[in-house]
Image 1 (spheres, rainbow, N blue to C red):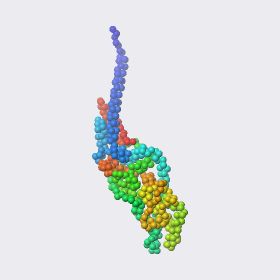
Image 2: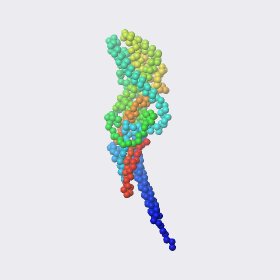
Image 3: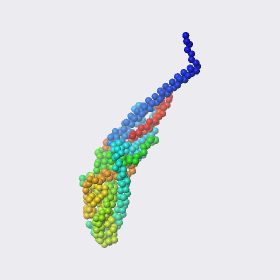
Image 4: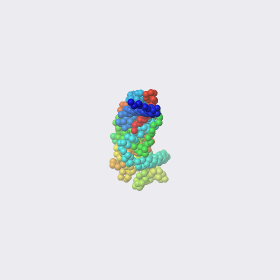
Length: 452
């Protein structure tokens, strides 16, 4: 019979091995429990964020949880309750950071809109536009410069007419008619035949851009805007919102793009703002062309000489000539605006062939207040392209908030989602979570979710 022996040393080694194996098994068991709890929490968060507002997505391509869950009463507790419903009921959860679509002047809305348009159109869509941005900004500067010049000349002409009014005829005075037409309501002059002016309006004080908003808090990773993001955002706005020449259905305002640019309460006021800006842009181009056309300048010079003779003041001929040139460019710009509103294109730069208004036509226009419609052209810019040009000159933060005005109003009224509030739409959140494992082990972690 063989006796079994084990030394004290081997006993200790064996005990240590058993302890190590036990510790490894315990550690693995705890880690597995942690992973299970974290997976449960992750599924709960993903499930909660899968409950995005579907009308917002379908109509505008924007992901967000509607935080009131159609009750009209926004509460972060609503989101925590949904996490519990989806399996995180035994996990203590606090919101460490949260982002709403309206935060930082609509930065989250802008980011998603840009990503949506990038996916839809691709990078090639901005190649033709990138080079035009500086050109459009230069046109704006010239337009403002010529606009100031026109105002100063009109004042000078007003003073001249006032000082000589006793010697001038009360009727059939072309200079007085020219001054008077610039004081007329622009919409009355340029509305094309069959154009029905919208009477829709909103309460400005209730809009996202004007009322006090719920604010997000906490730190979350922010994505910087890319070089072409402004252009992508402008393309998104043109895609999703209607305008006077191309209206959308179920909208609170008919002239949505005009609202984005003007920010006024009524369709009428916004359209007046936009066509006023287009008129200024066209005025700069038309005036620039007149300064290069010798034949047209000769016509103006002849008429200026005649009118200065009527005043018995040959020395004022240069003032009259300058005023007539500005008035001619102004009249042509009115024709251009009317042409654009009729759905036609206007050449970017005029030529003798594409010029619409004769000098006699200008005098007739000033007398009868009747603006002719321009020629049909295949090349040139449409009304929508001028809107795009004007978008480039606007702050993207201002555009983003006004776009949210329209999104909210259209969903609330146009689609009868009266519970909807843009500042109750959650686009991302960071959750601090705590759970308890066996033997009182406390496990803390956080889960970040943000719509991409």
